Image 1: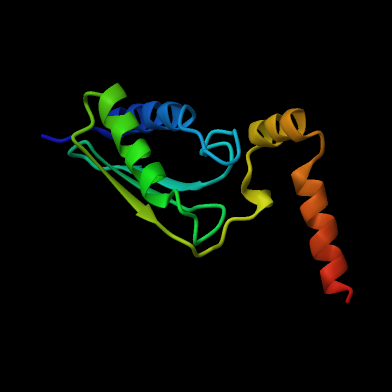
Image 2: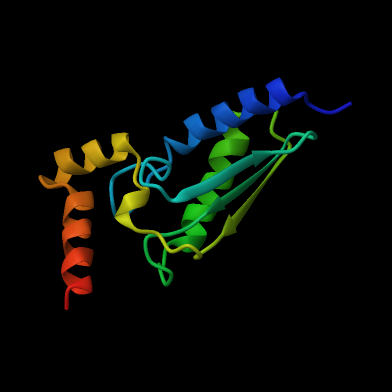
Length: 128
């Protein structure tokens, strides 16, 4: 017999907490709050499927980040049987995907609001 919906949701919450401890090596914000994780799905047999992206498609640390996600989840959550991480680039990442927590963290680190700056930049490009 597989996991119930409630058990799957509890497991999904645990996975998200682990993802909040995996950091992008270039931007010191966790990958979940940075908005790189698009979906976390827990199957009834305890497998986890994650759809995530990178800040740039040609990012040289892609394999490192994927392995870090898998290893962190398998290491910290024994009830997870297997982890599949799918890198997707559609839709492409942009600063609007950052969570409110990630946005505040970015402001503390870099001293400006990346979302506001991105909106201004996109607005000025559309006016050209």
